[in-house]
Image (cartoon, rainbow, N blue to C red; front, side, top):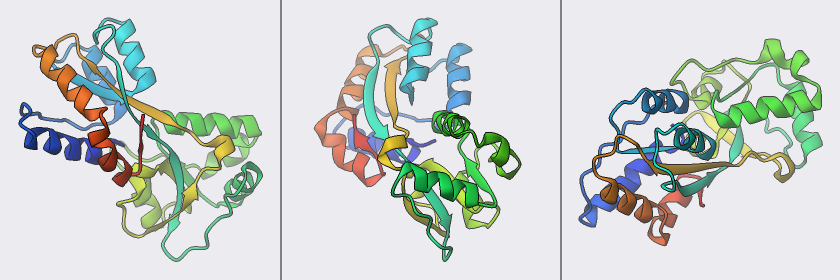
Length: 219
């Protein structure tokens, strides 16, 4: 879901330049990988790079077809009007996390990495009862905006368009979680040349402005 708005922009730009019509189905990354692995007929899949590599290794995406598209970092959000946490260092972030009465993070790759960070800090047992897991398809930002959680962690691209929240800032550089989103040609693809051309366009400098506008950076 982190790439949903970006893909909408890039597909429109592709078609404006005379490219083939493209229909994108944006769903959670776990569901997307399962559907491709189950053999559903898709031409193209765009997921976190590790998931793309697993699909290639299992024969559900074509070898050599992975194209890295964007880097996506994690940011921290609070409800509009709430005090902003200090995020200038890893120690400051740890203190903010421990002080939060409730928190939530994505169930995708960035959330898995954040949970691993909490484990490394030795605070997961302390935090467990405070963690609110977002229901499928529900952005963390909306839980923050509604007041259900005090501190929300999600990729910046998924927070910047949510009303009712303030983005306190990115994670400190020392613990920033960088997800590379990549595309690949599915094994069920019937138009591999068209897909490769589309991926080349999405990875080109022409696409950089759209990536930055959606809170990401070119890969």
